[in-house]
Image 1 (tube, rainbow, N blue to C red):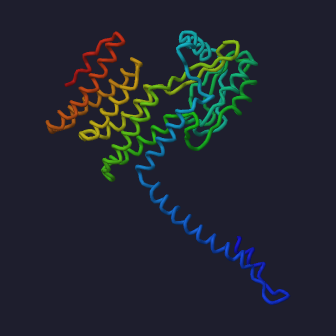
Image 2 (image 1 turned 90 degrees about the horizontal axis):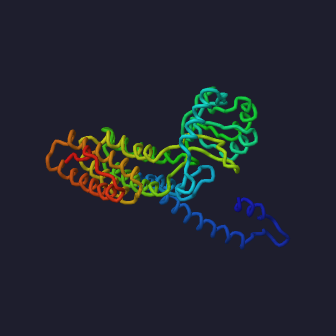
Image 3 (image 1 turned 180 degrees about the vertical axis):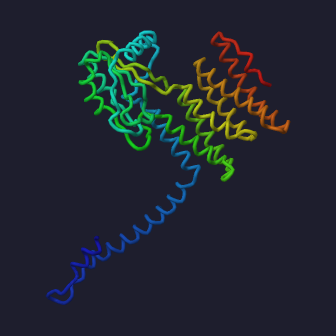
Amino acid sequence: MYCVLVLLAIGPAEHGVFVPHFSVNIVFLLVLIDLAVLIYFLHHIAIQIQLPFVIASIARDLTRYLGVRKPDIRMSTADQPDDTEEIAALVDTIKSSGAMLRTPKGGYLQAIRYDMLIRAASAADAVVYMPYRPGNFLVEDSELAAVWPPEAADRITRRLIRAQITGPVRNLAQDPAFGIDQLVEIAIRALSPAVNDTYTALTCVDWLGNTLCKLARVWTPAPAYYDRTGAIRVICEQVTYENLVQRSFDKIRQASSGMPALLMRQLEAIKAIMEQTTDPDQARVLMDEATMIQRANLESVPEAFDRIAVERRFSAVASVYARLSDSAGDHVHPEYDLT
């Protein structure tokens, strides 16, 4: 565009043809800058489309998500324990006598404005129960939420339509499981007979382990949201730590049957995660996954030397779990002894 504008300035003048020499020199300078940018762009694209960089980019986005406490996701703390019995009783009441709200359109539930729902429910003196969470697929005209008392359904419906975002794809806005599912999908495709790329699968396991280390410290989503008076206004489904761990390892374990390298790397990742957690329940979930991996090792790895190598990693995980159990006053379950 700059060259075109300079051409418009070239033409006959009072003392001959006018040539804007200064502008032409700027054109040559811009050509050199554009060439440098083009070379950098080609190099950048060639690097970024490589699978290790794609995997690291997904993990980085998920880590960045975990590093920011989302205002639309309530995290429970020891100072604010949730009354699980009260929540369960409310859910039963809403399911039996509440009014059902329908999904306006099909698609993936991408985000929910919980703050808007809390204000609407508080103004109507109602409780909203949402059996779906961001990341779930909603069928058009199916159940989206339920309201109690039923008389408040009309007022809540208008706010709910504005408070939820449904789209054709999932995103990380309020769905950390999406980032994990992406990494797992890359791993199991890499393990398919058509690709047979063990290195890529190992890279995915490494980044999944790094992500779950961070999750172990910060992921405590709460099922209920309260208004300023302390009354429960919104009850919603949340992805649990157990579900995230199962998403991270189950499919890869199933696809890596008979592959000692993948089994060992998964056990090493579980050991690293377990060393980062202080929650006995989280440690038990991780130990369950390690036990299934060891069971797959005993059933699918034919070479004794390879089985022993995997068993060493499992024993290391069991040792960490035993230390955590002793500090928490628990005992290691006998079914975990699969050596």
